[in-house]
Image 1 (cartoon, one colour):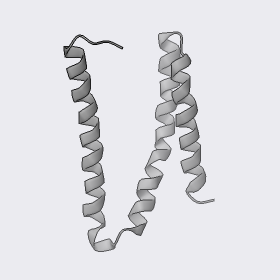
Image 2 (spheres, rainbow, N blue to C red):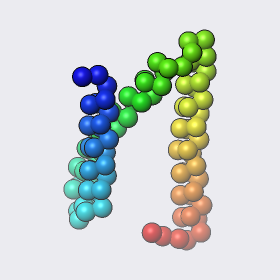
Image 3 (cartoon, rainbow, N blue to C red):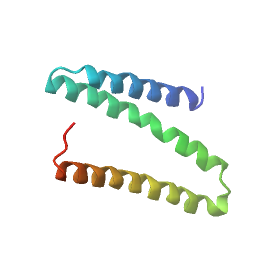
Image 4 (cartoon, helix red, strand yellow):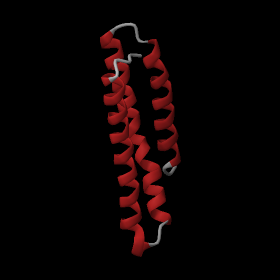
Length: 92
């Protein structure tokens, strides 16, 4: 079967339960739905592995490390944006 079914299943689970979070009407329902979103993110590592197979061996570690830098930078950007927007008194 390969990795494709695992990746597709993970993407479907993330998408379905991600949209489901918008329909949650109670806190514990939201927590349960978000649990399944987290469960689906287990399949999100598959493209990273596939990319590693196509990179040249001598530069593989360096290139994969760059991807992790941007991943971390994106996470920190979200935190910074949230801090700034909350600090300005804005609310969703």
